[in-house]
Amino acid sequence: MAKRPRSLSHSLFATLLAFALSAVLAVAAALVSIAYHGQEVRSEEALVAQARQCAEALDGRTASQRIALLAEQIPGPVRFTLVDDRGSVAYDSRNRDSAWENHSDRPEVLQAEEGGEGVLMRHSDTLGRDTLYVAERLSDGWVVRVSEERMSLAAFLGSMAVPLGVMLAFALLAAVVLSRLLTLRIMKPLDDLDPGNPLAADAYGEMQPLLGRIDQQQRQLRRQNEELKQAEGMRREFSANVSHEMKTPLQVISGSAEMIAEGLVAPQDTREFGRRIYQEAQRLRALINDVLTLSRLDEAPAGGEGAPVDLLETARRTCERLEPLAAEKGIALSLSGGGAVVPGSEPLIEQAVANLVQNAIRYTGEGGRVAVEVSLAQGPQGPQGIVKVRDTGMGIAPEDLQKVFERFYRGEKSRSKETGGTGLGLAIVKHAALHHGGDVSVESEPGRGSEFTLRLPADRL
Image (spheres, rainbow, N blue to C red):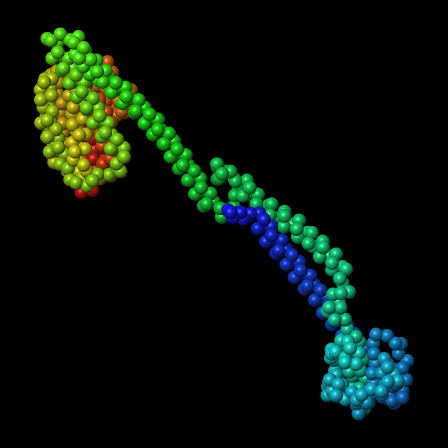
């Protein structure tokens, strides 16, 4: 069974309520204790003053006068006791006819005999109550003692039970209401948070780092979702383009083979149909190879493998391999430049250079020129190996400059069958450059040729 998550508002309310009740009880206990102590102090001071006045009135009188004077006192809460110089009780206002034990050992009497005055709160075994005693020594050694029963703290609280109960009930109600209001006030910035836009709410400053992190993650997730949507769209478009590009050669191959198989081709035309089947098969093979190359580049992590690649030697091998194609079209192919070594995948870099050179030959007319230049230059991020491929071909329209590196894009669609190619060559160049941490760019004018520049970082060697 899943554990129910804790509620912050309930926890906060319980904490505030417990704190408020504890504070109320502590304050009430302190006030009661202060009131009780204050009353005791005032009562003690009053009893001491009364005992001193009584001693002044009795001092200098005979024993009978003292007893008569004390007997005239109106019975009340104050008790008067007269003790002679031997400790015997000569008079007690509470029990006048009773026989009393000797009081010479009573603590308050001993204090009075020694210091003239004794004040003591003690439990009276005779009366069974807490009593405050004040004893004053007379000049002839007699002691007059004034005592008064005192209310204990428990009795004091008992006498205030009703007002205390009412006060605590109101305090409890106030604590509940205030705790609820405080909880709502504290929780309001949290309740106002918009999960979709966490930084829009007026949240606590302590929460800003967390909300900033949540907002950053949400923006990152939205960006990733957009990228996934774009990638999915590109994948679908790529799949549709691949299907479309494969359909034409497959139809030619299938149609030509069917006509030969049905005997609909004259013997003298069989060789031409075979040549057509072979060309379309080669075209289909090139398309499949380019698609596989792009798939590997899409899945491979960025960054070269780190093996040193000599760009000049790579360009030389490429030009030697494509020289027959250039000669067949009457195009002058040249190579120049110096040594430039970059880290990366030699087959992939060679394919990128070959695609640039082959693309230049394909779109350059008879009598044109294709020049390949290799160099090492300082770039914004460090040294770069550079391969430039210039041609004197038809050029590229300004609106097409940013599209030539897209998959299956051809600027001259009407000449696509004439020039050949799969429409993936420049896309492979772009992804190969990105794979190695470089880039590729193009400058061109219609009718004046094009210049493609491949840049690869050389500072990781």
